[in-house]
Image (cartoon, rainbow, N blue to C red; front, top):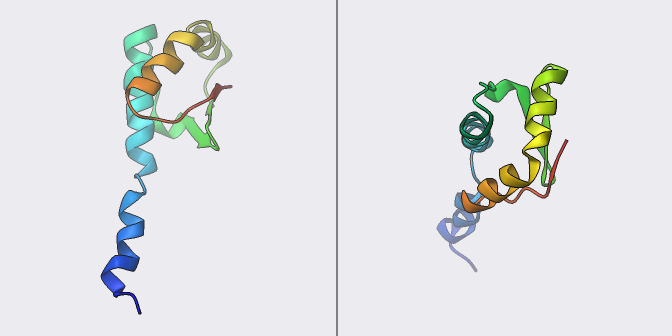
Length: 82
């Protein structure tokens, strides 16, 4: 029978979604010079969705490839930006 500690070690792998959102917001600011609040970012199954005004979404989408590269370097597994 396994020890309860080894069972709970599985959950240490999970990241805090708030930290991921802060990382995404920081990278967006570096690439576009616009501030994005973590509350405006949704992450679901490798897809990042921004709930901001259309002007900001267009600016983010225009830098989509660079943003995906930077997110990959930061260790986030993001495949699509919407």
